[in-house]
Image 1: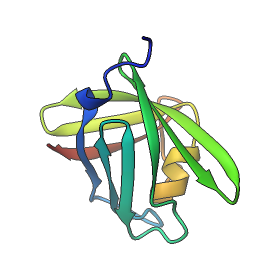
Image 2: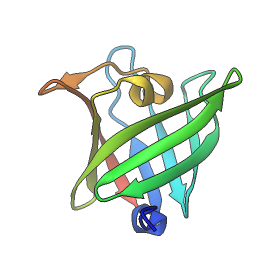
Image 3: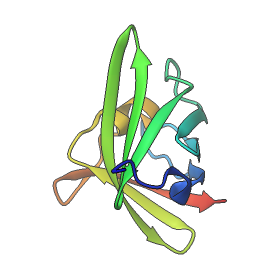
Image 4: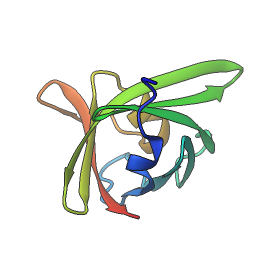
Length: 112
């Protein structure tokens, strides 16, 4: 179907090691829907996502506009790094513009 298995990434991804102006928070994924909770004001509280291989595309609506960002998932035990060529996801939810190897990325602790 090309949609991927959305339940394969189900769980909570928590960013707890904010530095500088970054904001802590978590995103919970559940069968194609996501919810956000955290200290970033004006961040959308939820939306949808699709999975393709190791990529997750998050979609949400803000100020009447549909927005989406694709991030690549790298898991190492309970640690998960999300990275992307686009900053939108990271700046919207975690106020982060941190780059590593030319990509925007953050490391989350993962729990089912």
